[in-house]
Image 1: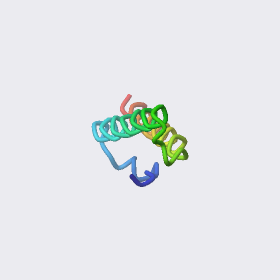
Image 2 (image 1 turned 90 degrees about the vertical axis):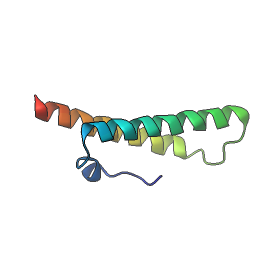
Image 3 (image 1 turned 90 degrees about the horizontal axis):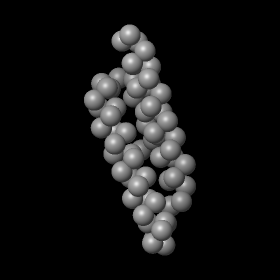
Image 4 (image 1 turned 30 degrees about the vertical axis):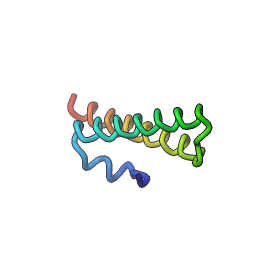
Amino acid sequence: MSVLKAKDLRNLSVSELDEKKKAVEKELFELRQKKVTGQLDKPHRFKLLRHEIARLNTVRQEKAKKNV
């Protein structure tokens, strides 16, 4: 999964943002599972995925405030 830029995310609808966030959270969960079992080969992905989730939340909030 490539790094998503905030300006690219702003073109997505709220439902698409929610779907992307759910997919990223699932990937983060799977990374945690690999870490526990000792199969983790890319520990840097934790930080990247947490930043992705933050970006998605930020854009989602911007859209919510714009609609109010």
